[in-house]
Length: 355
Image (tube, rainbow, N blue to C red; front, side):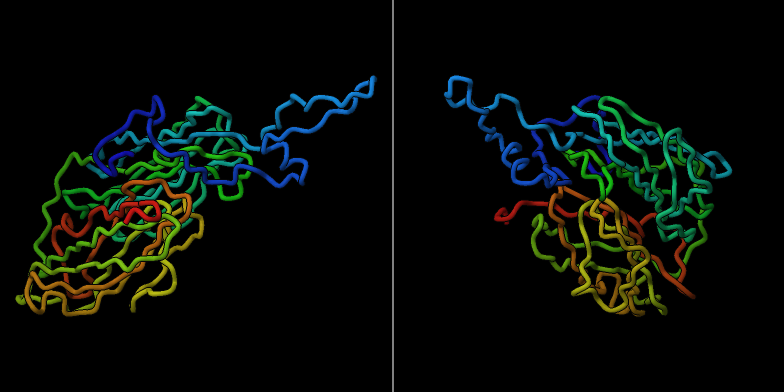
């Protein structure tokens, strides 16, 4: 399992020791005969000329899906003094089979970074899934391909624009490369390297004017049972300014869901809204929580606590899965340096009975 933000695994070979977790069904409906063949039970051959019954047919069942192993990785270039930069995302297929059905890259932008124009990639079609130029909201686009051969890789070059007020500690986004939801032709054998963090490097530092609040958040690191019930996760929202300036307005906590997790409708807290929602477990949803005024009223160490339900969807890879979130003020509440306002939130995906 890859480290969410720090360690980089080489895309030269798939990781060993991981469970095979197919995203799609291994068999397509082919009638009773097809099912028997697929189970390897064979069929009885016609009787021979001498009247003796024939032997079971030796021919193996035809394969109904391709076994593929998709991965992605990121190579980040520096932003120039004007805040312009590019990023190269490599999408590949470890094999053993060609992916002949639709596959796609999903790119979720870091906070304070926008994509001015969609990338142009030979053989790929880029479309927006969600576009929002606000510094505290991610955008997301998709690059679709008709398939990808075993052992092949595709480079997608993404243009980026850094906001002038971006924090000195950059935020992170994500890339995800998977088979599409309607692809019943290909089965991905391992989902542990289908996503990668988007990290940026700055050549210049920002010197922000001081604000009157200092917002940040933490969250409960509870495990989630794959395919199990939703768990209420406690999020703690702090204001380092404390009693000297409690928030006077609503503050916004915005996040994209980790890979193969969802926020079910039941149990969503007051002030919770949908910016973008998708039922496909390989495509994140984007949500925003409005935290009421008064954060810091009882001191810098007394948080406002809100519970948000999260659920690990069936088919999720095991291990630590994460996504970015940010907590920012609105209105007359201002924050100078946003370096502490964002970080990677995540959960440990476990099998039933492990906790």
